[in-house]
Length: 146
Image (cartoon, rainbow, N blue to C red):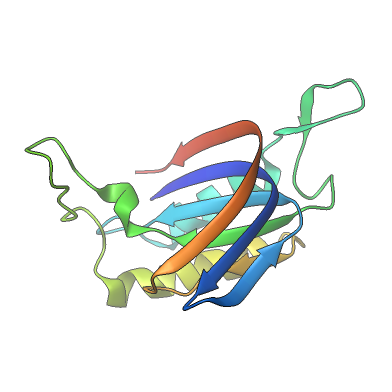
């Protein structure tokens, strides 16, 4: 399982020109589920996301978590994080979990992250989503658990 975590000032997510989710500031997290992933990977990554200290304290040091600063998380499923471009120029997505198995793990990750008392918004699994975000920093962290 992979997560791309971006510190943001604002993020909106729309489907078919309809606003679905919006966070005023916090983290946008793109989550990729690999074939064979389990709840253990989701538990590990969501704990990391909840406690990741990438917000600045009063001394300008990245020392605070999203919960510490009262931020929110937008968690977006993104199978393309497992795109393999090692052969040719067209990505292969054979490493990504099948949708019928990935969606329950994504929903589990949402609920797990909420258990840390962090407001969590989500995307629409499998939809063509348009995401607009104002990155902060920019700060982007890649988390992975095999």
